[in-house]
Image (cartoon, rainbow, N blue to C red):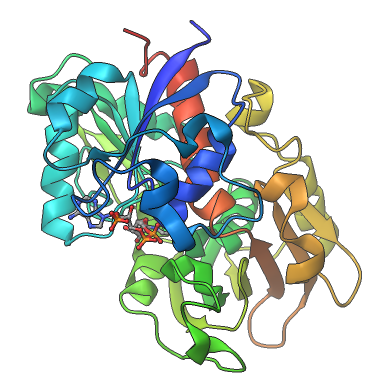
Length: 363
Ligand code: NAP
């Protein structure tokens, strides 16, 4: 494995794109070679194209501030030529995103995507590297369909899942879950917004996020699925019913979860499983992997967004308030950083797993 790969960011001016830039600045394996966005931004220096939309705490890194933004849709072949793979996070219609990502893959450029467009394409792996790294093995079947040697598409799951699915998936490995009821409390950066660009959210709560409840219920079943005859077959359980609520928080999705097990374990058994879990990212010590994937907080008032959202640089998941329930077996609260683990950071970790497994290679 080489340790220097040239990377493109498609949708570099957006909320997720900006987060990619800050996470890839000084990355040990990946160097940003191309920034691309809509024709509105193309041809401008990055700092002028992003302008007042820059929403990160840190300054725009000097290495990209003057980079000229390329046209994500009209420069596909040129971009594919310059880089070893791209990250993609764009705000376009689903069909357009599907077609755009396939154009990059067919130009022999692997795509690691934050977009939802390909999350249900049967031979596209949707990967949480700690939970279902085995789905990476579907890529040869996808390459065969696309007629490519290097190119493929891999996606990460929706940001909401990261607040409840890791804990459920880890305990489900030993103590099978029958069903669960989840309510998510989602930050405004998940919609690509800040309080400045979405002032209606100050002191407010909106009990609707378009399409989010379906994603939160269906995507876990695909994560729990298996590969059969070149496609990923969804699991039938554990089934989840979910409500998603937008709350006045900048970064950090929280979930309140009720779980019914097939056979009820003890609270101690569950906490032991959560805190001792190590997945492939931890075993391979991938650069962006949290040392500990899941922390358990025993204080009654944790996890809290302000105190815990940046746990393990935003790549870890915080769980607390695990206690018995009168209707379900247990209930607990989960928290994760939606634009780090839930978006750009999750995609970077996914790319690192794909690189370590040899699916992303330097040209
Ligand atoms: P955003 O802030 O609205 O940014 C959208 C990006 O798409 C910008 O770079 C924009 O470029 C580009 N774009 C728009 N139209 C385009 C076109 N016709 N051709 C090429 N590029 C175009 O959105 P975001 O929050 O970063 O989200 C991006 C994607 O990630 C979405 O699919 C979203 O569902 C997904 N996602 C977001 C989060 C999150 O936490 N925010 C989490 C998981 C997944 P211009 O600046 O030039 O318009």
